[in-house]
Amino acid sequence: MPTTKTHAEEHQEQWQEIVADPILRDLPYKVETNHRGQIVLSPHTTHHARQQKRIQETLDTLLNAGEAFSEWPIATAGGTKQADVIWASETRFENMEETGEPPTLAPEVCVEVMSASNDWDEMEEKIALYRDAGADEVWVVDETGRVHFFADEELEQSDRAPDFPDTL
Image 1 (cartoon, rainbow, N blue to C red):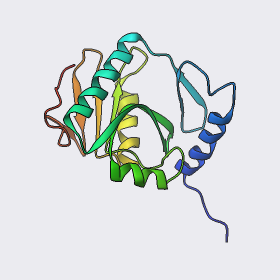
Image 2 (image 1 turned 90 degrees about the vertical axis):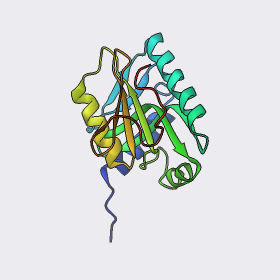
Image 3 (image 1 turned 120 degrees about the horizontal axis):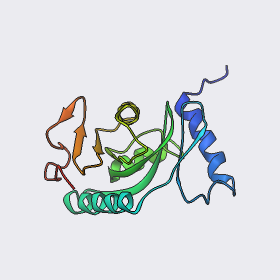
Image 4 (image 1 turned 180 degrees about the vertical axis):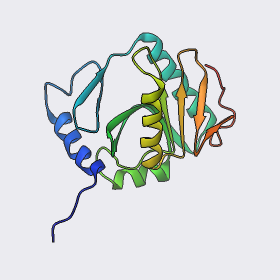
């Protein structure tokens, strides 16, 4: 009997093709796919890159039972997304690895840094996709530097990293 693949697994296979393509793998942009599997490119500004680094360094300082990374791909039901910053415990990294490349299981914390090309509709979609893929929290840093923390609903502060500032 044939097995049925989930949408996330289909996006996972497509992502492997994109990564293997010599023309696409060296693009100087953030690459994601949408729910149709179409490639979406997002150029970054220096401000965006600096925000990512601040978030990553702060997470590594506050949470020492895991590790933070920038530009982490996650195969979701709505395409393969690249969280701007993630944090995962060692156990979660092991569990993510078991789901394939890119993982269909999200890290505990996924962070998106908004830019002029983003809007809250897109952020709400990503929050739902990351949460459906297993993220405990999704943070959105708006263009003013305010950090919005989400779990089942918007939080006043992160449960995972309660000392993380609400403004960068």
